[in-house]
Image (cartoon, rainbow, N blue to C red; front, side, top):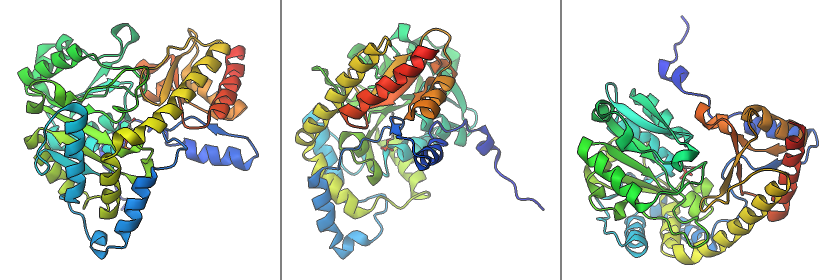
Length: 390
Ligand SMILES: Cc1ncc(COP(=O)(O)O)c(C=O)c1O
């Protein structure tokens, strides 16, 4: 008899980046000079302070044992100090922090912890794919909330029907936003927390780009908002803040009951991040402000190079205030998947089409600022050649 696959697998939408690594390898093998601006995975080395701390920790046999969900207490303590220093918020290290194997893992597992059949998960589109993926795996009904430029790419929960909100168990929000680079004003966050408190909605606030902001803009933590801790869990990541994507290290912080539920789910799915990596994380999180400065300078000069080269090529590009992306509108009627297909196949430049983030993101494409300024300029010129032909 043939084996069966669970129906949830078929319900998952195609993952935006799934086919790219294979095609990239084929193009490189065929001699194409590929510039990959697809995944948000910068070419910047991880901070020395983190690498040194891991190297030292690796020599300690105790670090090679299971981490379990408790993990390394020093990692939790560094997170608590960071939130206090940076946002002025207090957290209990044991009950209000959960170490994660990257924030993606935490977000997807959070859906399993709070949503299920009979409840609604509000998912922004365009948005990071694990919100919808986790919600579908949890069996929840997904309500897509479209991010529109005329609304500054904000999801106004209070504008949704009250009967929908009454059935909603979780809302995923992400500002500074991937892929639109939108940021959330404080009064918007206050309104959002108020709606979540009124309807008992768990607010999964995904904040991996909180440190990647420019031109004087400083992004807040949702936990700065009065009453947020009643409903919110904020997801942080070492991936973008410190260029440590491969380490798979992040954390969740906020409401203790929600975090206890996440912890329970995780107990059955993983046994914690490698303790030596958590030692590296603790070392670097304690030096966030100093470590982030040079990285920000790199991303800012890449952003400026990208915006000016794209404008020279004929695109109308807003200057992003945050993140490591540029979200670029295409001329009316140009299909983003076709456009991205041409930049890859004809020009060897990998970009992400808006449609990969969901149908309502049609009409845009995203570049990630993951290579040098010179390569970004070169890539934007090549993208401009495709624009000239459409
Ligand atoms: C909005 C958003 N959330 C979460 C993540 C996942 O980050 P991590 O590497 O911590 O899993 C990403 C990665 O691109 C992201 O863009």
